[in-house]
Image (cartoon, rainbow, N blue to C red; front, side):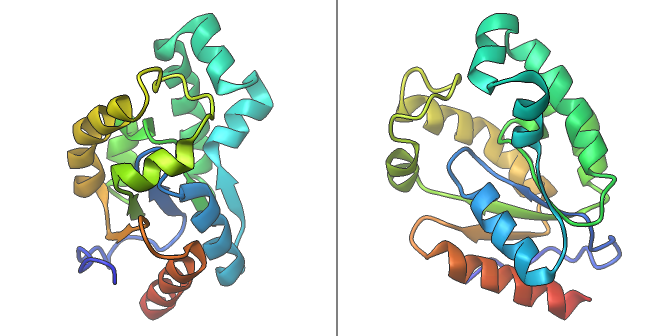
Length: 176
């Protein structure tokens, strides 16, 4: 079951924003939740890829600082919508994004290192050249930000994504 939500009932319900570490299931669960709620779904990483090319190539070509600048623009635009928005794991590092999220309903999805390792597999992720040890370090650094911004938290390590998405839909419907 999810952790007890922070009372942010004064915040607008939409966009409903998903945050969390790499491999937590933000895109898959967010897409299912959006479908269950009958609202549009936006994945900011997919928008970046569509406009600028693969994220690993952006990192290799231009570096992380450049990537974070374009990510911030995409995130700011996406937060103007009325559906479900899935952010990349590092999007919350930007102070302007943090300020924006303070006024939104935010679903924090976490995952343990063991489950993340299975999900990441051989995928190209520019910040994970050192494997799961890099993932653990990054998650440890970002966890306080995720927790501070969240309206509700779900651990995705062991439960099916469909069950988690259903729980989120139920939570949202109770709020609306």
